[in-house]
Length: 395
Ligand SMILES: Cc1ncc(COP(=O)(O)O)c(C=O)c1O
Image 1 (cartoon, rainbow, N blue to C red):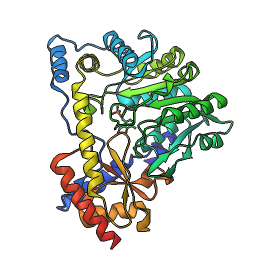
Image 2: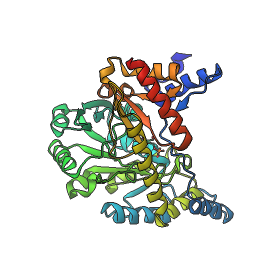
Image 3: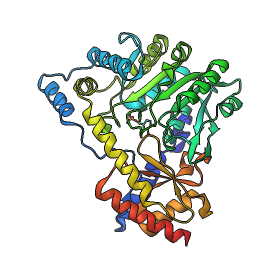
Image 4: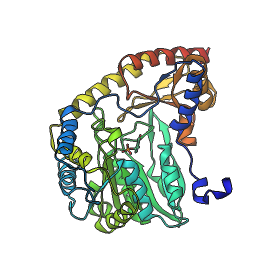
């Protein structure tokens, strides 16, 4: 059977979360009940006014094929949002594309930019689901090792430049940065931007966690820093995390019209975009009251404090305070074990699920990613187990 599978598919891998999920399901089948601090899935319900907008659209018969670029109303809402929140002006007619989540936006951007053998520079560690679409587009991921200093992962512009070869074409950034929790600062982005310009790279900027930042950190969209960067960048975003809409599968991209036109062809020949009534709800989310976003952010801030507080004082363990997103990296290098081994022991001996940092690249080795996307009882029980499990491993 394997001979029937195309070569390009043989390079695709399940994401770390999916691989661990399979392990968890096996254990559940044997009667275990592990608590998950793994997933990047907000536990909030989609705010009612957004769900109501979808229901109203359904009642109005908004069930025909969508405009494949995205419904004009939603593209206009995205343009307004980018001007309001990111200081960016885009033409909703030609520079914006509505996608099935950030996942499809990233895929379409790669498909539009990458030729066979082109390198795509990616920070290491990074969200592991970037690697397969890079390969699917014919590209080669080229990791740029991050440095961990003073409790913060940094992406050194010098390292980006040193990693460049003549085959390097694209830099894929994620800020706020999964899994590290770093929010790239304006000064850092300006220096990285200078490398992009010097090396003639293109930029894919995944900004899906932009709404979840903690004082004093603030999200800066790289394309807003200069006209040259804007001309070389595709901004990717999604409603998944900001509005607790992971299951709605709706996101958007913005960039120069030639790139968006190429991405549009990719989309038109594959997904054809999110459902029409979902796009109406997305427009309501972007143009409606934003208090729900602020309330969720405040709750994530409380959860973040709980994670840091509950892992204090453990021998050989240091929880790094994330600047954005809903993941905390926990530095366990002093335990002297590979992160996957620590993860495995936590799962099998203490019944708590986290992701090993090495799943996100060698630069994540020595750390664990702990999610606080879910709070309440789940978070409290998970943290108690995590603390006890790490104590046991240290002892
Ligand atoms: C960095 C990053 N980008 C993209 C995605 C996927 O987003 P979407 O649900 O919009 O496809 C995730 C989901 O966890 C993510 O962490």
